[in-house]
Amino acid sequence: MEWWGWLLVGLGALGIVFGLYVLVRRLIWFLRGFIMGLFSELGKGSLSGSESAQPRSLSSLESLLLPQVLRDFPEYNSALAAERVRRDAAAYYRSGITGSPAFTDGVTKQFRTVFAAALPTGVKGGIIVHRVALHAYEAVSLDRMLTYQAAVQYTDTDDAVRQRRLVLKYVASFTDDPANEMKSYNCPNCGAPIPVIGNKACRYCGTALKTPAGLGWRLYDAHEG
Ligand SMILES: [Zn+2]
Image 1 (tube, rainbow, N blue to C red):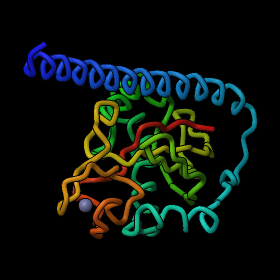
Image 2 (cartoon, rainbow, N blue to C red; image 1 turned 30 degrees about the vertical axis):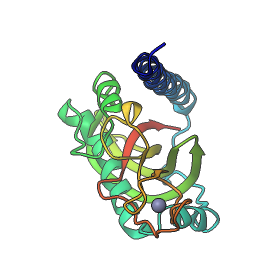
Image 3 (cartoon, rainbow, N blue to C red; image 1 turned 180 degrees about the vertical axis):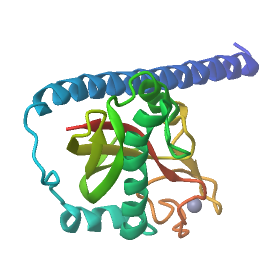
C-alpha cells in the first residue's frame, strides 16, 4: 500500500478509538446518574418517620482528605468551597418552592435535566443550612470527585420543621458536560499531552504546570441520605 493509504488507515483507526472513548464516557456517566437516582429514592423511604428537632449529624473527613485534595488542587480553598456547598444546598430546597432548578451555574447538564424532572416536594420556606462537611474525595480514572454533606432545615407545607441531610457530589471539569470532555491538555513547553489533574510538572521536560484556567467543580448529584 502507498504511504497515504497507511495514513488513511491510521486516521480511521484514531477516529474509531476516539468515538469509542466518548461513547464509553457517556455510558459511565449515564449509569452513574441512574444508580445515584436509585439510591436517593431508597434514602427517602428510610428517612420518613425518623423526625427530630435537632439538625442531622454529619461526618466530616476534612482533616483526613484535605492533604490529598490540596496535592491535586493547590488552589482549593476550604472556606470558599463550604460557602459554595451551602449555596447549592439552599438552592436544592429552594427549587422545591419555585418549581424550577434554583442553581445558577456550576451544575452538569445531566444533573440539571435529572433534577428538573424530580424536584423536592413539600418545601414551604425557612431554609437554613446548619453545617456542611467534606465527606469523600475520589479519583476514578481521570475524574476527581468531592462529596459533601449538608445539614439543612426547612418548613414543609404542613408547617412542620424538617431536618435533612443532603449529599452533594462535585466533579472537576472544564464544562457543564464532563461526559464528553477530554481531560488532558498539552505542555506549553514541549507539547506533550498531560492529564489535567494531579500533574504539577510535565513528565517529559519538567516544566512546572499551573492548573489550567476554566477548571471548576460541577455539581453532578444531590440527594437526601
Ligand atoms: Zn513538557
